Length: 175
Image 1 (cartoon, rainbow, N blue to C red):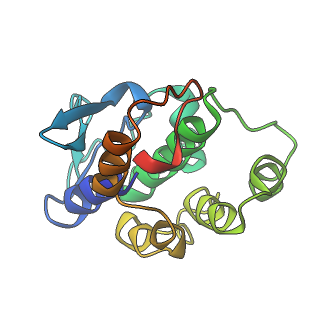
Image 2: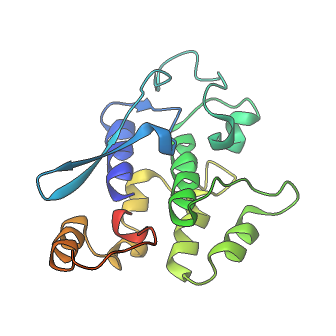
């Protein structure tokens, strides 16, 4: 997730563009040397922030931010929402949909109450109001990411313990 958020922060601030279709299927996991690398793919729906067609509701429905569904213009906040949904799916291993009559923050607390930092980050990334939603650069500074080992440290750990077979999916190290 660090790498995904870094890519989004660069895209939003430097390229002045919105991806418009952030989802697990558009994230490539590549192992270059000893360190895993995440690559954001499929820029077919990406738009410049100056594009007059930012009101289009293009994208994968289950990853669309509430403001996009309501017909508001796309902003970088839509990519952060989709990254939050993606993060939930990487952690749980299942596709995620919010119950229609439940507040987003309540749903997050019910599913991730075991980790207060994770709940805090997801609540900020999945804030229904895009004006109050954390941006990608701010998300990278969240304390949640300071509690996790780096990907390179996890690769070294993996190499040292490669004799042990791990059957459960490891979620946090790639975040």
